[in-house]
Length: 385
Image 1 (cartoon, helix red, strand yellow):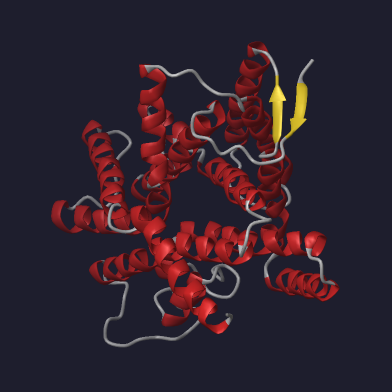
Image 2: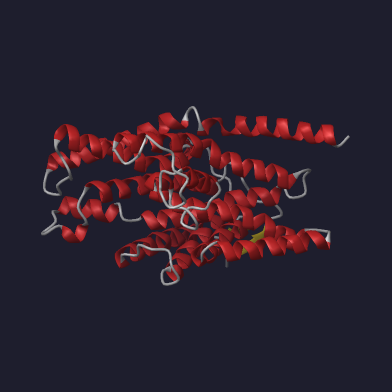
């Protein structure tokens, strides 16, 4: 029978199987989202294609897991972010460190990405460069910029520059805020602190829409199971993996393309299978050249998965504009082999472009964090002897 152990700390060691799986899943999820949106923006909708060729059927099916990829991001965010915060909860200035880590994680990538969004908007003639708008309803306005920086897209403002994948960052932002508040409710020593945390949670509940709160449970599932190790045999682990893949295919065949109460049971079941599988992989893997290469590949793509996620849509818009204006191709044809090659070339440019963009920005997130903490904590030290 499976042996279940509740860990004192979340295991974040990179030489364990579950860490390798998490890296692979992060990278694959970002690659899937980019492939799905590139197909959706450059090819006609599947239902609009009469007698779709086999190659297009394969492309449409294989690039149709974008919503499940976002669920994977939510689960892994809970596992990594929530688990890491729980590990550091009793350390000095844990909440201050957590706040700096979360803000830097988002803003180091978002600020330069929003500059690219503005440039892309100017290129495709969607941005009025003659005046600055502060409207909360216009996608290129200063109000939309500010709102997206603090997770208010889809709540008060639209995604900045019509970069629609940013909707999920609103979820992530509020999960980052809600989780430490929940910790304060149950762990704070002062009653006043607990009361303030409850009031803050109440205010957030009134602000955000129901879907964000509903899917917070999936984020919490990742955080909870980061402390669970399930010891089972190889047959059980393979069964969980096959069940995970099977549930993903089942949801894909249903054509689920939303995040509402109706789709929630399917996503919750998928998330539960995922965390059970990851918990069953919490043991040290043997070193070997093949596994090491897989591990390095997974970490390579995982490292710039966030950049690829937020950057790929403005890149697609610019490349689509170039196809129309230079080559006269308004939409890729499912019946043209040349157009499949164009799709592949565009996809490669997305991945390479995101990696090159990652190097000066996202890769330097640890340095930015270290500098911010040095500056802020030094000032606190001056004020508080």
